[in-house]
Length: 475
Image 1 (cartoon, rainbow, N blue to C red):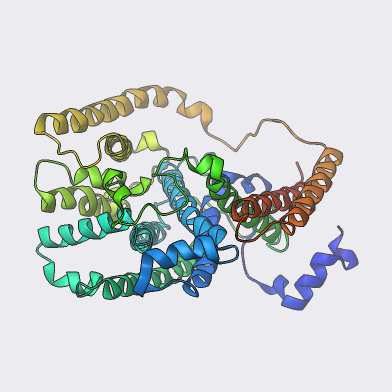
Image 2: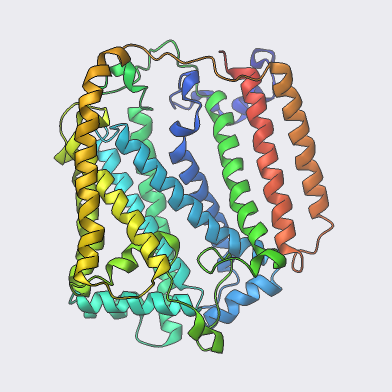
């Protein structure tokens, strides 16, 4: 579509003055998923805000569990709202995890992005906090376990006076009123901090390919770079496709898992619905599982040092180290093998998280003896540090060959005709999915409606990407 001839996007830009927005464009090669992981997390955050506000209309702190189940069984599209709100948190946390890994290994915490990294770490911590409070709101057996763990940690840390502030005065009404209030407060803080994080990211720009900066900080794209095309509409269309794709996945996965024939086989760790009520007979058979992203913390609470020390080791020390990364590593080296000790430390921590998460899933709540703690903790340190320094010797030999400008291979490319055909087909699929959803019952057939809507959003995203490929990418 030729914008110079008054096309659709040109009309939109004129109405909303989008050509005056001072956002920075990017080169063609940056329209790739690794550069947009933060956008995926932001898209999930937007979904959480929208669905969370709608769920507020139906949730009753005075009867947390029953009102949650009533949303699923009695509210039109309620099962879609609740299950996608849960999986929206899952997708957001997973995207933040992967985004953090990508940022670290690219050295994107180096100058001038140190404050951006610190804000990202705080956003991650607040996301986990909002998730903890959020899954405690359901009032099911896992919610009761989470609240008990939270109270136990505060008591072990000598912060018993904070229990009424966070968990109320002991009545169920006060407990869930407090939890709901904290959930809203943390979510609002998340949005505020994200706005600041986005502002810094926009000012600093996307981090270019490391070869362009010879693996040295600061790695910046000049705003006068001839490869930078205007932000509107290229970046907007690609971002819109990312949003639709993320929302489609958030809808599709829990809706498939909520189909009755599938739901009975889904482990409680991945279930899109709450567990049984803590007062029901089934509650005694449910292990004290947290969500998957808290598994490693729960296992740390089983360590043989006492709950206070376990909490400090499993939560506060890692958070402090992450916040201090820009101060601990102040060199200008960007390649992970040029900053070996902090890379090895990061890989060690990541290995511990994976080990403890798997262990917690297999043996939830089982106390850990000292020898098993040593067997789990020590080998990753030796392997990570030894492996990184060994690989570094090889890196020095090939480093010179990798310097210079980015050199992309041809790879697989669709012809423009094939991309157009794909765009038309996915648009038709999206329309069919939406039409089918109108014939389904919004209460009884909630999971199937979610499947249709998720399919439609993913299909629309594919159509947009095909359009983007044809109109704006010049390979």
